[in-house]
Image 1 (cartoon, helix red, strand yellow):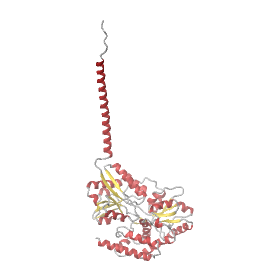
Image 2 (cartoon, rainbow, N blue to C red; image 1 turned 45 degrees about the vertical axis):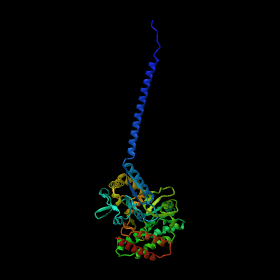
Image 3 (cartoon, rainbow, N blue to C red; image 1 turned 60 degrees about the vertical axis):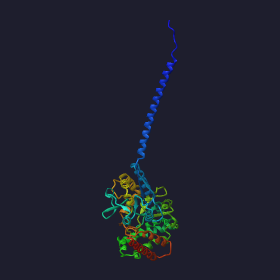
Length: 446
């Protein structure tokens, strides 16, 4: 009979020990495999989100209104998402002075930027600050600035100006859009008699005064002589001529009759939409973008009309003064230049450009399939008044026919004149002196 021996514990412990080591090894292998995949996935995501090589371009533009600013910011965000290898830095310029003064200081600091919004490209071409824009950007755009066979700036949008008014107030006092200038003045008189400020003016922003000044200049001067500014440069007409005196008299009448807000010199342009919506004023002279940014409510509904002249004619502003240009500094780096060109192409792309025109109520300068927003209400009012105007006027004070810095001089003279007992003739003499001084400075710098 065999003897039953106990199992060899040493042998069994060795087998368990080996099995445990194998199990742990397998677990470590699996863990590191999973970690490796996670790291690779993370690094791959980082590479997609943050390209190894990023080209940075700078954008300089005017904070003309919140709507324009918002659309530029949206364009930058969408562009960077579509082109992660390009980063766009930007800083909207908002100051009380005219935009050209802002750009002059940027040039002095060598901070003009790579892509620049301009109002009058000619001066910057003459100053050798710009680089040519390639045909792939400019070929389908309706207005561009060209010189010496090259395109130096391309139109961004086309705009107009007019009276944006509170329909609820007009209805309350049984007022209708005016057919003549006398009817417009009568509207102002009725509103004032009923304790409503007829017109909101934002004199704190010097550039806001362009609206009324250029309206009267179109009506009293350019409607009769479309080459008035060129003739002034040639010495054929003067800022002391009767049409200018009439312009100054017409404008002064609004202030003398207290048809504008009493605190007009302390109000900024950005405040006017709130004053209009709240019924503090009944009308403001502005651009369509202001209407685009105002939400209609039970107490506010927007209307639009052009101020007619004494014979009932209306002269629509055909504003082609918003350009994109590329700086000379931009062109010194081919990579930066191509990135800037890429941004401009994206700006005019179908989806992006139609959104901009829709949300600012501006007119496209490049053919697009459609503007997708509603074609009724205030948009229809703006389109109708523009199309039915007696004449569309392109020229304006501050265009390329004017010497540099004259516009700011003139607006300051007119602001002082409107708040004083100075006569129209005296103000006209000062404007003529400023014109001649700026013309002489420009010639000396040639």
